[in-house]
Length: 133
Image (cartoon, rainbow, N blue to C red; front, top):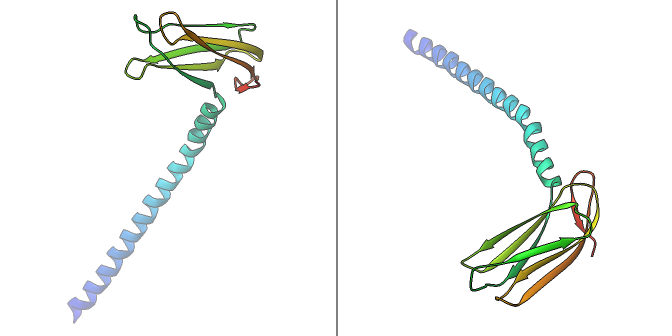
């Protein structure tokens, strides 16, 4: 009998200690998560605010691809990626400075044929790009 009571007490003490350690670990994990949440949220919000506009076109020349653009107000950076497998042009306009401007994006669908996309954009003080027309 004596051993059984001692064993029960020991089991109760060990069980309480395990629960306490688990609770402390959970609290520490929650504290760490709370500390990281604002940084993660801020980072995500900043990325979301730095939005850009994307335009897609398709075409192929005998020498690969060809594109150009013109603008009346250089407020956005124009990047173009070309996918050789799908013959897809991906134009990406990212804000450089605040203002309004019209961009004419030109891409070749064959050696002598072009298509164009004309777009008027606004870039706000945070670099967000909005299509106006």
